[in-house]
Image (cartoon, rainbow, N blue to C red; front, top):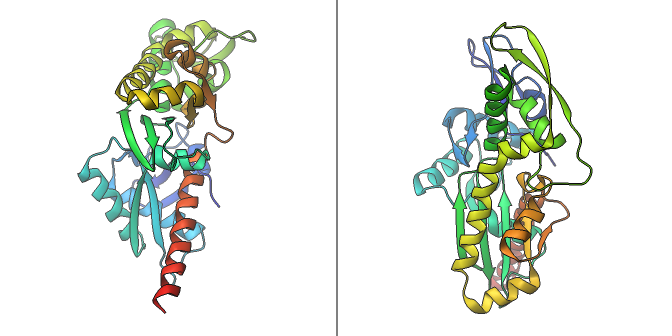
Length: 311
């Protein structure tokens, strides 16, 4: 029903919510001092409880939920978060108006959304590169056999590009500009159709607007630390998998999901470093939420079946 960035714009004087989602994302770096566009979720965890609760309440309202039809909520969370962070997510959902909050780990939801045969005695490997975390899991018989999670994702790549441009060219660029650079010319492996891009920012010495030309090689160099961390986590997870499942992975391959997984050449880089075929799924951005939707459908059908049996 909704596909929005997790950004909310607030008036710091009155604490009123001015915008949420795509509209608030457009405001980042472009607002007066008293209007703040913030991300209440960072590294897969809540950084501001009250704002997160207000954002969930707004999401429920946009989905058509009112005080009279309070829903049960299923939330996908990174497996890397702590028990305290899990409870914070549940309490935020209940405080926003949900009658019950249930959590599902993102790798499992992503595997379901990708249509992998997770209930069979077969090794299925999923790599979910999100905004704040990267999770690699080997799944078999409906459970996670091996898991490796790191707090590195797309937001860290954006911050690295900002730091690189500031250090090498002496200009400051915003978070949105850094993401646009990553999407336009960012890559994890040399590609055939590469081209340079114009980057506009503020000169740190003079304070005046300045334009520089950035090449894909430079962006690749800037992203190397994050890409290497992702590759290392995948290699470690492969090393944790039982030998029998490792045989399956050579045939089934690795399935890459998440917005960060859409970084050009990342599938090729993973394939080269692991010697295992890598497949980018059809809908990498929506894969996790589609899996959560299928979980809810299965839950509702089981509920109806048990209610019928009880009668």
